[in-house]
Length: 403
Image (cartoon, rainbow, N blue to C red; front, side):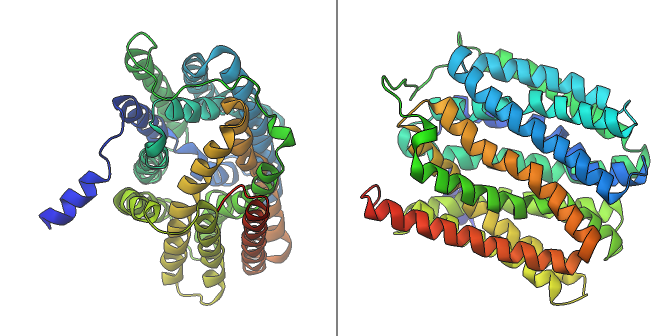
């Protein structure tokens, strides 16, 4: 047991203190981000919106994320990641508090859009910061540590959110989300101010290649959009499936979503450390993760037994654990050819674009043909993602861009 613990601890060795601070800031921020998984429930239960209304509100959410990510990449390359992160976190905290006072369809669409524009400027800046604070050989593990912080926050967040929404209502979620963003801002200013922190791998390419002319990147981008469409169903349509089909309450939904974060916290870093030493390429590993994620939807159609929810969550979690760190690391490898902010913004934007179409399409499909048929479609999309990634691997080998 001691040897197992020591092996687990060794997977964290060699990471810079700045990466650890960045992970803690992310943990504080994401623990408070409990509104998002419960947003569809809040809109349908408290505000009495239809599934179709929720779908369009989530489209506004996605459009804001796209605009914010693009803007964050531009600002990161212009004024630097530190200023972008500070201004984004502080403003996001204020906007989340304000959101709870909006109650009409139009005002919520506008409010969600503006909140996400501001919130998602943080994401490309954070990944550029992480890259700058990491040695080249540690970047995948640094990504994994940040993801551990995100998922530890998400494991605590949904459970707390379920208890808070059952006890004092959904408005408490907006207050906690806003306050934790502000607290994360204070910590960021204290520990990652350029006067007290140091970069390890910050660089500027003299003649950067435009991301818009990078064909392999755009094949990768399209595959990530498809992957994100199916993945995001777990944070929009899936809570409704748990509630309406399997009759789970908000506390039970929170516990089930928390299992995802706990499992990732315990096993992702050792898994990634082991896979990094394997013979498989990053693209091959992303393909495997995409296949597992698509299977998580297929198993839900096989039985009405509620135990399949745990099996589906397990498949999705393992797929996520593999796909996200290696896709992020692969994007950072490609970003060495151009401006990091621009490349990382476009990588993150693949997920933002998916929120525009994925949330809306998923809910509209469910409203039209039901949950089971929607899960068959998500499984097929997972197969399409794997096919695109296989083509990317074949193309890059033919062009001698990878071995």
